[in-house]
Image (cartoon, rainbow, N blue to C red; front, side):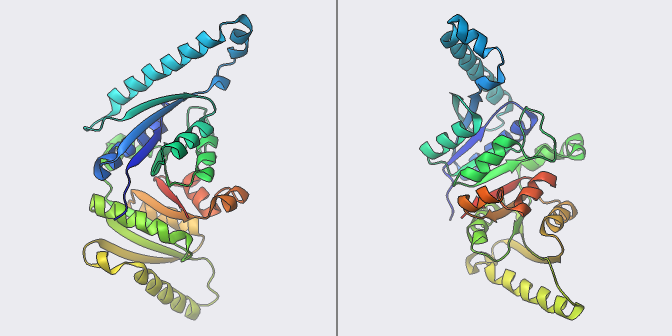
Length: 296
């Protein structure tokens, strides 16, 4: 069984990080894992820092910012913690991506849970730069949380979904990149007693006859991916679709009310060359549900 012992959740007090923190709490509870809530004080966000430095009070200025950050983090955790989990609180000073990556490496983090956007007002269709860099650089899986859809928030469903995952979608192209991701999908399905759907998308099929054969072949490949040890104990089904992968993934998420998408992504070198895979990136950009990106 896959073990998750340490979960890191960066917090910038935005709506995205609030929802990410709720997910982190739920996962920490289910996996009995330690949770670290991290806040980063970025001096670049304070335009008057250079002026303070010139007056000789820079050290005191930085100390005050750190103390303020610690107090806000304590208040945040007190307000949003809904279970018995007692997270460790950490405040760092520096560039957010560097601090997150450094802490994740130093503590050998098993999972990072963070919002797709922060407080800087990025356009909805552009993944936040902090999340982008962390997802490209970290060797551990990252669960990226988008803001809850307006209709879910209005009915209270968004908060309910955070506490219990009912439907999980695993997307595969049958490459080695997706093998490890399947282990995470099966693990989460087991922990939450959820329903797991295995999806493969065929991009190009030349003729109707070939389409039927291709779909049948893909369906058999999906079925072979299901380990015998879980075949009779978990609720698992398969789906084969035709079209652009990211479009079909997003459509299936909406149709079946998926709570979390699990995807394997290529190694860090390849990710740097092509963001981190166009399909994963677009699902994060345009989708309405959290995405667990698992690096090989």
